[in-house]
Image (cartoon, rainbow, N blue to C red; front, side, top):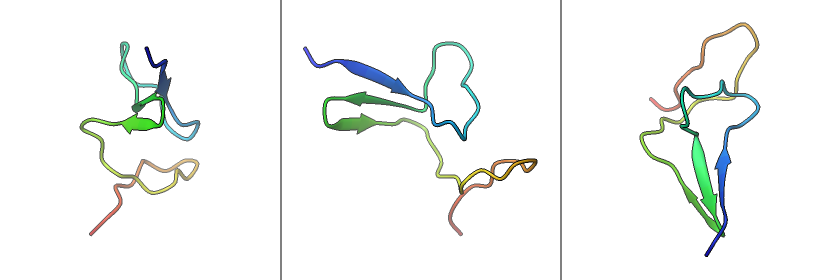
Length: 51
């Protein structure tokens, strides 16, 4: 069985409950319902990436 690792980048807030921003299983990264954000800037709200 492949080990699963929950991922939460240091630049993001910790999700509520037992959710995570992603899960790594071997060489596969799974994300669900995630929106791309620009790199965090201190003191500013997260900014979605894209047009």
